[in-house]
Length: 324
Image: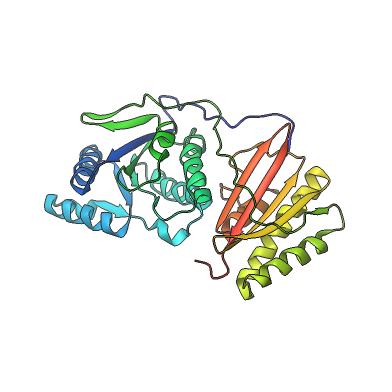
């Protein structure tokens, strides 16, 4: 978890030879979804490219039926991102693993990925939007590949389509992908974090106070039904974040509360996290350091990070007692 005094969260534009070709595909109904997605896949297969599709079970069946009718169903792989859970912070490593595997075989790649937007909390929706932005940065230096992001305009929160338009350099038109008019290359505009819901009294901590942090988190968690592995994971994640605050910022402050049936731990300190992809890239075997936020992303249902060189860093960890 690197801390420094400068830096910005901006996405470099891919060159002609490298990077992600990130395409937004707003669709209005199932027929529109199938026709647009099928055209994208057929173009890829015609060019000898590998194709992977990661969509909902309902959309997957529509795609399988359409591909079977074309006799090409055996040339398309389907990826289940649902097993990664609801945390958007786990999605980039999954795509990196798959793209890396295919790239080793020397084949260009096209993928379709539709995220679940319905039935998410406001915080989850905000992080999923940020994930779409970070994809551009995460794959800026990768071999060229295409990612089509279908988006059901009839069943998503207000403002989401406009926000996604700012994260996708391309949009799927009637004649294929074209430059998106709303795409913004500059720094990402974060949504403001929601106010805490009746938080416990703030706990200020510094070196030697990790036991106090664990006691505070345990007390709140057990009041809200945390036991066993879920309590253990929450304590490990909270200890990791608090330890980083002590190491890089000399300490910080903790607040805990329950919201929407989940527990939230918020850490604030005066440090700065320079890399916006911290915790979202799988550490290598020989990597020294940098594993803390990765482990936090794997253990928590949601991780929100807001960091600024002048005002410091806020990290919010959200977990449910039952893992739902």
